[in-house]
Image: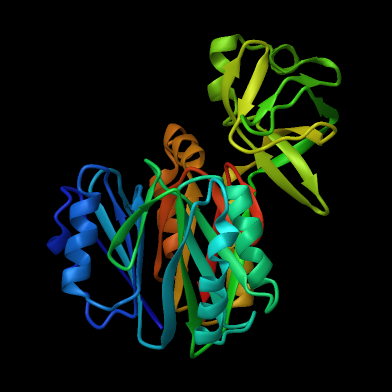
Length: 351
């Protein structure tokens, strides 16, 4: 298979599409002002070609912050795109669409991936989608776009998740997740006084969450929202860590980007050696795939801000580019199988 990436920093869709021929799946990453126009035009130019889209930044070896990016697969894939609606209330209502699409693609865990762009309520969405994917042990990689809108096959939806099932007809696929943080074992907490609907942590070990976080890190309240780049929370999930970013301060509580429940066990996380972690990820992928056709990834907005602050973002994209054709987008939350995570990178590699 082949992966195409085209971009226009000014939002010129024709410029971004230059050189694209015979696509079998198109992913649109647009800006808020031109999203509707781009979705409509793309369907006119490539009628019947499966497509999904959202509002967000895209990249290959360079990042497109406010224009438009096009990622397309061709030459040896089978793909279908669709949408589940009402994700804030009942995404399962539309699950038969996904079940039908699974039959059409007829994929296996070795050759098929689900890529999704979501408008919100990610945890519930992933539980719903993965209830179908797990029947064939098919992995999922995706993320949340901006402004609560996504597109599928030329139509724009709110309160929805757009997805594409992609089968590699000439090789295997595999999903990965990269974590640049490690737990500080001495800072283990039991969460309480949580608000699941508002993603609020009221207390940690019986004390106000804001005060606990400030006292450990010796920071002011104003510094909390940037300190989370270096010290988010983490929830242990088996041998894995689900990263939980802080979104806001609410009185003496902390509002997060993903749900925390009463009695959840949390750890304070610490930023590790970013460059070493990235090198390890690249080496792991190379060990698994002697021949790579494409890498599609989703990087968290907070990773983008952290890497940019450390003057590493451009180098990071260049290093990932050494794998071959690497492209992706910057999300507001990352999806890995049935996990909704923050401050992470998820990707799928195609042989």
